[in-house]
Image (tube, rainbow, N blue to C red; front, top):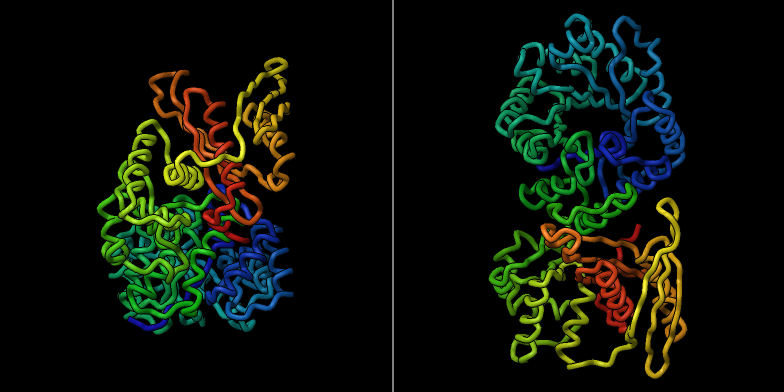
Length: 529
């Protein structure tokens, strides 16, 4: 095994082919700059022969300076029956102006005969001609052997011939691709080791995650000598995605002792993951290994108790090393240790000797049984703890009554909400219209309170989720509402539960505004783009 492994990022090309992922030119430039800062070695910007957006990206990228990474354009070998000099797709690869060109060619005889519909010798000529032509133009050429493992299993000698013709033509790297993502680690290791034994060129690996082994297969290839890994941030990619670099990079560094990106970049891994999700307008996966909010979350009371005494008991690494943090969850599975650690995280001075700990734990489990959920509603939990500690604390406001109605027909309607809010001895009676009942209620409540509390004008509801808790009850089922609110610099979550969705929403809205006024620095800063 080699001590250094190159990281080749294809988020902007292969990753953009994933369902629900769509990057603008500006998006791609921002991500490329962030990847360069993070320290990856190659950034594959796209396929200039496939669409005008990628052509525009490369035109703009030529005016940018990359400090660490080399930019790569992606394309295919020349077409059958066409001289390489006359192939428009190859011409566009050169016009992209990148120092690196990544080229894919067919390894499998099945694809040669049924997809390209050419002879095996013609396919070899297409590979050799294109690599040689690009090398003659001074490019670093990375050859991606498409369907490499499937092709090798079908005909090992022909697969080897395709790699060797690319090497002979001058390819700087031969990258073995599990294009269908269906191989097992043992297969990948065996075939990669065979390729390394028969080639002089450095060998890389490109895997997909169709059976959930994209990262495992990449690591298996590295174990037998591959020193170049291709993948995407957060595992974006076609079908179920590509090899996930946010898992692969820390595995290589912390588990296998391989140098990849600069050591200081590892602490920015979670930030990179969330940045790319935000640019893609995708909600981060809380179960993402290493970087997800659940990666170091502890819920069971015995687990929390153990982590409190010895972090390594249930954490394979210090979460701070990848920019993450421990997250103690509160639920009906919680024990005293959960409450103590979570209260400390939320800014409360609480220890095991205080009798209120038992009361808080009892109240949490009682509410969880009713359908409340505090894992994503830390602001509601903070208010609950405050209530138990201060015994009937003074509230900033109380809602005396509310009413919501709708006007109009089935195709067009307007919602109207009326609220009566008491602030000390002052009563505010306000009305607001909205796109729906919750929007109208939020407007009326905010309108009533902003007179006494101007700072609430900055608060915005940023997310709203509804969960039916007991669907067998039909329209009488209890409903849980989770609301995320923010003031531009931080975000916090609140929860409400009721058979009436409007009442549940009001509970969560009231908690959100009460928490904002409370001013405790217990909300986590929002990830910045």
